[in-house]
Structure formats: structure tokens, C-alpha cells
Length: 368
Image 1 (cartoon, rainbow, N blue to C red):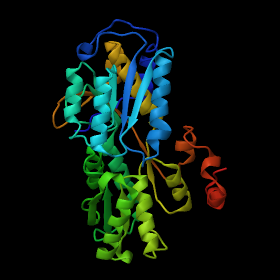
Image 2: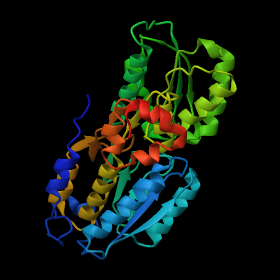
Image 3: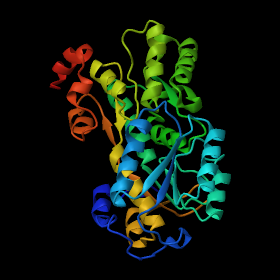
Image 4: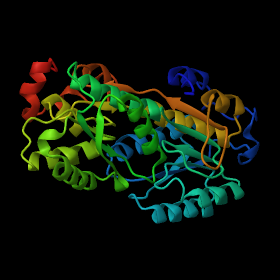
């Protein structure tokens, strides 16, 4: 049964005093480091750079929020693993050795990192799983509602296929990395919408979420199914959607089938404007990143009341049950609501999207 995601805005109001010093309200923070003041270090481990969101949004937003919550005294120790699980394990070990106060962990490989999570726990360093649910004794988890992401993608594909949809229509599924537990949830959500309504003609788990791997998988699908027999493509994110489109165009497909995505990357928004990609799932990164920073600071400062207010959901990992969590809501973005999502939230300006190459398409959509 789906757990209901709490409102990020409401959580932010509850935490309006988060940066005003130690409140000495311990709540459930017995596993945290001893109550500290504002001079804290938050370790931030992000998984890769292929997805532009991590460098453009997550890291700078978390860094800025930690500083604002700690009167500019707290700092973020940052490392990106470049999709290398062994490298991330070494980065996390360094943070443990450096005695950071709390770790925000976005795992490359949710299973492989469990040993390091356990080491951090033994060293008295709380670990908050960020965006992906790592295994091991995680203290809390914040992410988007991942099954809802997949459901939105699946529903959008059916919408794009229209009233003439037939159960024999062939769909290719370009799923995410098998080491990312989110990818499994995206797939489950999509299949809950697609099963019985279309035929899944091919399905790939794409190593490291890389666009070039998705492109190679799509070449295989085209060869096996035939370029004219593919009605739609489920792509779990925007980067892979770009690889899928390259493969289709190289095969001579002029009229592209509906293709999904996720993350609302600028290049994907422009492809949507141009009619090359049907949709993307817009995820409000500032909300997730700011709430993660609030959770980390509250945890290490022993502010149990604020921490509990941010983690009213619970999730289970393969190793740990009842992990306190926050699940942030998402929305489907098509050419119909670009203005109301990424533009309205200040992610991109119209001028970012509507470069000279896309001016005519933007004008047709009223993006000015």
C-alpha cells in the first residue's frame, strides 16, 4: 500500500526555527552524535555526473541550506563517485575517518555500500539515504515518490498513444541501472499502468544509467523488433531518452514515437518543445535538497521534534524496516505545462529553453 507523502511546504514551516541554535529536544535522536552547535560538518556523497541535476542543483542547494541553518558556521564535505561503487566506498570511508557529523548518501550501488553504512553507524555517524535507499542501518530516507514517477510515465505513454491504443502495440522499456533500487520502483510503477494495455516487446536494465548504454540497447531493440513496429518507448530518465532518440534517428526514424523521461533536464525540456520527447517527470529538487539539509542538521543537533516533523513516512529496505522517511511528490511535464513547472519554479528561464534553435517551436507553444 502506498504511503502518503507529506507536504514539503508544511515541513518547511515546522522547521522555520531549525537554524536558531540547539533546542536540546532529543526526541528519537539517541543514535545521533552528541548534541552539537552550529559548527558541524555534513558529508555529502552523490553518485554520478551523467545526470546534470547533482552538480547543478543538489550539491549547491544543500551547501547553501546547511550554511543558512547554522549561521554560516556549518560546512559540507562533498564527493561525487562518478558511477563507481568502489570509489564511493572509499569516499565514505574518508568521511568516517574525518569524523564528519552526519552523512547524506546517494548510493551508486545500494547493496554494496551497506558495509560502509554499518561502519558509519559504529563510529556514531548518522547516515541519511538521499534520493536512493541504501541498505544497512540507515537513520532516515528522503526521496521522491518513485512508484508515482513510474506511474506518471506509464500513464503519459498511454495518453500519447491515444484512443486507438491496442494491446498488440509494442513498447520498449529502457529501465535504469540494476544497482539503483529506485529504478526497480520506477519500473514497477510504469508496469502497473502498461501491463495488459500494450505489449512489452523488449525490456532493458541499463548499466549506470548511461545514455550510450541506452543507445546501444535501443539499437538492439530496433534490430529485433523493427523500427516501424515500435509504438512507444518507456525511458526511465532524460539522459537515456537522449540515447534512445539518437538510435532512432540513426536508424532513419523521422516520426519519433512517444518517449518518456525523468528529471526535466534542460536538453529534455528542449526536446519536448521540439516534439522529439513526449514528457519528463518534473521533480522539485530544491524541495528535496533543502529538506535533506534540514534533516541532517536536525539529526546531528539532536532536534528530535523537527526531525520527526520531516520524517512522517516510513519505508523498508532489504536490511532495515521502518526507516523514517519523507517522500516528495512529482508531476508529469509535457509541452502543455512547461510554463507551470520548471519555469514557474525558477529552474529555467524562458531564455534558457527558447534558444534560437527552438524559437519557432517555443512561439508555437506560447513560451515567450
